[in-house]
Image (tube, rainbow, N blue to C red; front, side, top):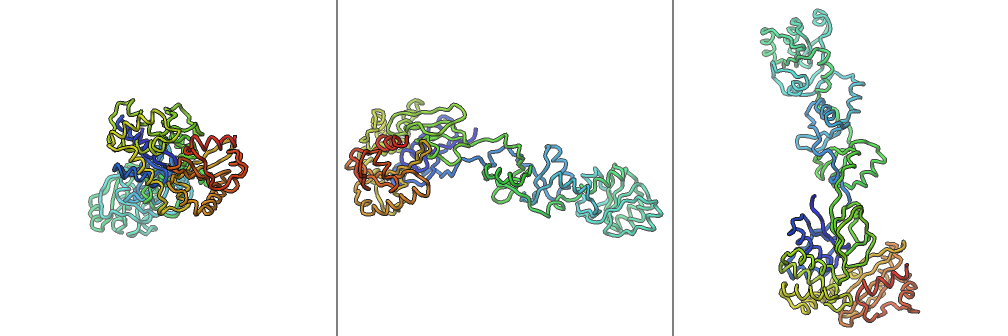
Length: 538
């Protein structure tokens, strides 16, 4: 099994980021190969936590869609353009394939040789031109070297098919001619005296020493094959460089990072069987055959702090989910096989991860303890949220000791870092901690932002509402709301898209719900917000 990616939801908050880092550390200590990833930009609070405990930000993961590199295509299957066509043909026969990518000496992709190309070459053969190398001819004809003066062999191919006297009287030979001949000494003598490019002696025929002397004097290349003249003539087209066949068109190719879904969409139009696979520098990696799709290796993932498809990585349906660690209600993600699913009614995913450390009896380093603590105090508002449980409190006390901090003082500094509006756009505030939910074909989104002074947002409330309207329209949300949670007052102010007014009035049983309405004690999206709105849609 390859590397497993561990990640939280698309709009990462402190709990989702710190839990994925800590869980990855734990899994690696258990002998697994995992890597923490994030699906979006970190908010200020999470950045504060990572910086405080000296932990690097995980790399960004764009998606977990199946890519060409996840398919068992024919890696390394290719042939060099200066090899004889015969080599490409033999490679296809051996592998049972009908195409082979052609590369230059730097492995750059230059074309595709197919059985269909070879069929056309044999059926429509009219040219007698040869363009190859001395070594290629030795290989294809199973020949031996007699005289060699040139590496490159180019010229017009002639077979000594006439009677010797007729051939000598009627066929003009020069330095551009390549002759296939048996042990017809008079023809060989005529050829070497004419200074032709090459003589190919068929049937292991003899060549007189006196004729060899003339060949050496006139720089005539000579090879000898055990094949008969007819066999040699049939093989000669296959002795040409492969590049003589593939330089006239540019076949469709795919990069190893291309999505399989995109490849299939293109194939629906082209209906080809084989496609070369290259990297971003056009270096050839091999050949993909459509039937190769039966053997693919989806990306292995572990999800933390979510189990909703809409909140997870793009292409999650194409990945293999190995495990889910979460503290939310059951969502829409399904799996094709049984998995480990740890779901607990606690205030933070980090509390669950902390307990996993205890179960495995693995020591928690100071920086990991600090991250776990950060996730818990963030999600439970320093244990003041109604979501906070006895297990959360136990974890906070133990982790703060290991991390060497006062959890209340540190927690307040952490939350303060997340309440600063400096440098943030309206979209940044809305998406700071943002989740999308689906129920009964309805979609709604809830953003939450913690503050110590609602006036900073209240003064620009109309602009926030306008942005919420735009987001709802662009994403076809039935409802979108921003809950601005006042840490000091222990309640939340609500801003929402205008079309959702009636839905929210029904949800909260309020006749005329105003923008910016304050809900005392409403601090938990999970307990105080989502269930109330779910009831309206259900």
